[in-house]
Image (cartoon, rainbow, N blue to C red; front, top):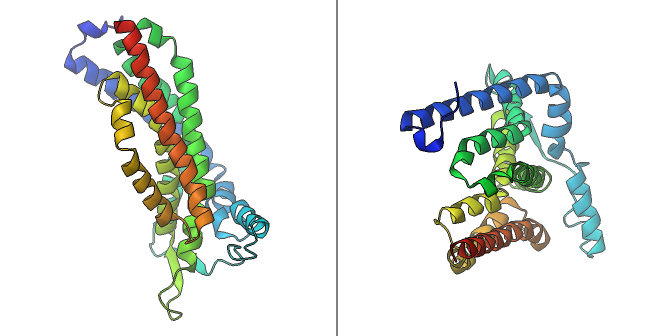
Length: 271
């Protein structure tokens, strides 16, 4: 059956399109999750539990950096004084399943974006529809950069902080596998989605919901929020906080720039 024009589609037609978008995206995620199942040993031993080892690349980078800045070994990680344990009968099976699904979502993100683009493209101008490849590429690139930033920066800093934080020598840190995996997933996916901010701002500006004036007006509040987040997820040293803060500020500034470009283009068209 021929696809209906946007103006001919009823509300139920839109819901039907959305339903199939979700179905196809779910199938893609499950297929990729099944594939990752066969390399789950590598995913857990080298990726998931990588930040629990003092030899992790981020810890070695900060240690080398501390020497270059004259901080000696103040931020060198020499041990991780905690253990990860399973406390539920079905705990490890659940962790395996949901980790594979999360990996499937991350790997399948470009496909999900493509499905999303097909869903919203009827509402766009013909000139805008030509930028499908650019949209998929830029959005996927930003997402994967965010995932890498979360994994190599946010996660190891968080793990190191919580591993070394103690209210008394009497208390020993023994984290549940669910708690640890949750920290990994939340940090990685949250950073990936945060790096999508320029794309989100682009569409919000197109819809007239956001303007560069609005973003610039509340810039100081955004900076405060970013600094608070950086202070929470990093150890109590200035270097770590700066490393986390700078990319997030760049993302926000890039969003303002994109919003300005969209507004200027709209003014040219209307003018």
